[in-house]
Amino acid sequence: MKKRVAIGIRGHSGWGALVAVSGEPGSEEVIERERVIIVDTKTPGVAQPYHFAQKLNRREGEKKAEQHVKKCAETSAQMALSAIRKIVERLRDRDYSIVGATILLGSGRPLPPFTKILASHPMLHIAEGVFFRQAFREAFERLAIPVTGIPERQLEERAGEVFGKSAPALQRRIAPMGRSLGPPWTLDQKSAALGAIIVLAASKH
Figure 1 (spheres, rainbow, N blue to C red):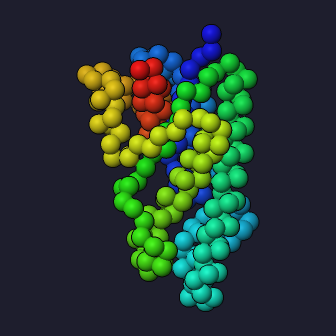
Figure 2: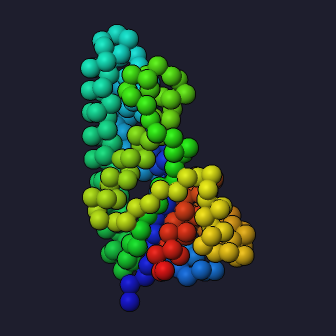
């Protein structure tokens, strides 16, 4: 019988902290942990595509700025797909069945038109968060893995809905999970692990 596993990702500019978790409630185990890079660091302006597009817009116009963001999106999507596919293949080779994935979300506020994004520095950061999370989402979708988004500020609430009174104990179990793995085991990995555990438990219902 295949073992069930779920994947959680907490995204950053150009990369994501990925954690895969398996096991029954109370005995969860981290079986994969990886920093997934989804930009070509040799290419200028890819880690912060909207910031770079803002500069391009001033020098060369909006069309060039949009082309830059589009090209970056295509590259990041390809890199995310390649990286996730390798991880999924490793898991399946170890006789795991991937039941789902979650990507931790930001505020969830809808993005304004491109021109307005470039006109607002805070919006540049919001847009870039959406940009990289979308690359991971597309990768899971192309691999036919069910993917959900959980707003990060709602993680504890979702854990309470799924695990009830045992949710605080779950949080305490996650904190030391990284000891056997070694560093890093920061907020990135802990949050991604919690998201994965929520998906793992919810997939049984």
